[in-house]
Amino acid sequence: MSQSCRVLVIGQGGREHAIVRQLLLGRDAPEVFVWPGSDGMFEATAGLRHAAAQRLVGASLIDAVLEQKIDLVVIGPEQPLADGIADQLRAKGVLVFGPSKDGARLESSKIYAKEIMQAAGVLTARSFVVDSVERTLASAREFKPPYVLKADGLAAGKGVFIEKTLAGLEQAARALFEQRVLGDAGARALLEEFSPGYEVSHLVLTNGKTAVALPPARDHKRLLDGDQGPNTGGMGVVAPVSLPEGLLEKIERDIVAPVVSELDRRGILFRGVLYFGLMITSDGPSVLEFNTRFGDPEAQALMPLLDEGRGPTWTEAFMAIAQGEVPRLVWNERRKVACVVMAAEGYPDSPLKGVAIPKLKELNQTTASYVLHAGTEKRGGEYVTNGGRVLNAVGVSERSLDDALARAYDAAESVRWAGCQLRKDIGRTV
Ligand code: AMP
Ligand code: GLY
Image 1 (cartoon, rainbow, N blue to C red):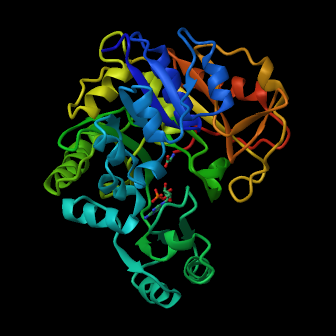
Image 2: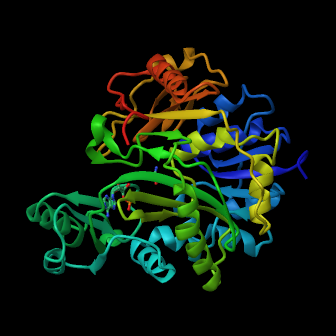
């Protein structure tokens, strides 16, 4: 399989660049195609061990996959999953790593996700479904501040409001239900009790019946140091994080197993990543959310942790899941990875596009310190900002997390552009 395996990765951000990079570095050297990909991703992968990733071209995705005889499709982002692309490809006989549209609803509807959590009997915050300012304020009487209001639908990291006062909650509810700032995605919402604790991103690969865990990771969701400022898609990740003794086993037993059984019980086709966003509370791990794909930037820190010398490669792992099997993954026990997100000026509200990143050309990329393209574009031979999260600086170390962080920050400093926002405390706060 491996020599000639033709893998397509769907997506164009830092997560997909990380996936493409790691597939290409695998000892089985698959041919990697990307739809749509980005200039930076294609250029950066040209210097890797094997051939560069190639842009998949064709009139439509499905036609191109069939014409190019793609063996395996790996779907990166949530939107194509929510749109049912995995089902369309499977209907044509293509092997896909990514859940069905039904499975993707665990992420594309927070109300449905809550229903699954409750049916599985896992710990999660109490909540009410709300669809008006009045209902929101009436339900809020059941809770103490801060109040958590979550738009039901996909909102690219902008759908969760955490408000310290009723006045703030009212404003958030007006934005969703009256100004319709998120359109239909915010027509209904969950009002949820605030859970104090610290967060862990726990990802598993699953065939919808059993699962294999990835090492736990820690994202930093707020824009500014010290967990201040607005929520973002994620400003930086470290992995693996060390957790109190017995906690991982508890997460597997009390959360992952019952949720996967619930998917199986409902007959949901789920072959891909299931991401448990957890709050570790004084009552134990509580589920905040599900994502039905790799986290971004969690993938950037998790992908390099696989020990392909002692177990399957990523291509083999994705292929196994796509075929309905669960691979035996082996992790590098010594390795630590840090990923620092470099965001555009104005992110998350209105990121400034078209700003030059002049030093990117000069960066000396190594296997221990490199930069991934998350939202860049090449204009007239130079890279410019083209999204909220622009670059991801990654540091890998076999010595310590501090060392991995120092490498990531060195790479970040060497490509920093005017107006770039980055947190200085990634890996330092919980
Ligand atoms: P979500 O998309 O549901 O994970 O929410 C985004 C972020 O909001 C989470 O990563 C948490 O930092 C925060 N959050 C969500 N729900 C709660 C909650 N019930 N209590 C405290 N913080 C929350
Ligand atoms: N980093 C959080 C997410 O991907 O949703």
